[in-house]
Image 1 (cartoon, rainbow, N blue to C red):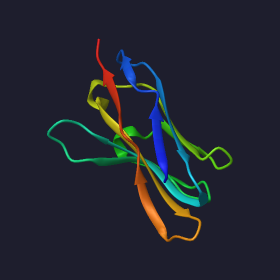
Image 2 (tube, rainbow, N blue to C red):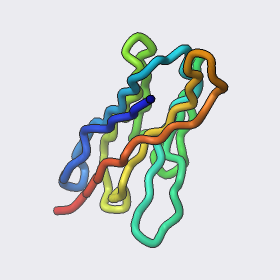
Image 3 (cartoon, helix red, strand yellow):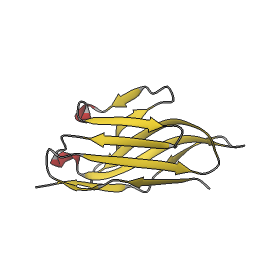
Image 4 (cartoon, rainbow, N blue to C red):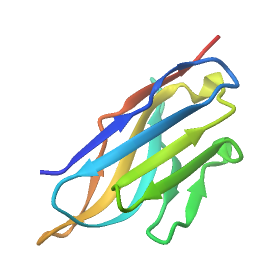
Length: 120
């Protein structure tokens, strides 16, 4: 019933920029926390950044000063602006949202993932 669709991934050179977007659609009553995670082959999935319903943000140490997370409640979207990209940022990026659909309890939803590759 609910769908999260990601876009914006691709191939960029070291030092370049990329903007990821994630939009939720469905019978949404309220979206609470939103976040971006990433997973490289052989690695654990790790939290990159998150933003709560009061627009408070959290960033992992390895992206602080380079990435910016934002949300638009009217459009049900969460974005991740990535600047100063490094080869170590190469991974599949996933968005996650905690959503309360009408007449249901809150549930975590995940996007399908989008590939980000940083290489010269």
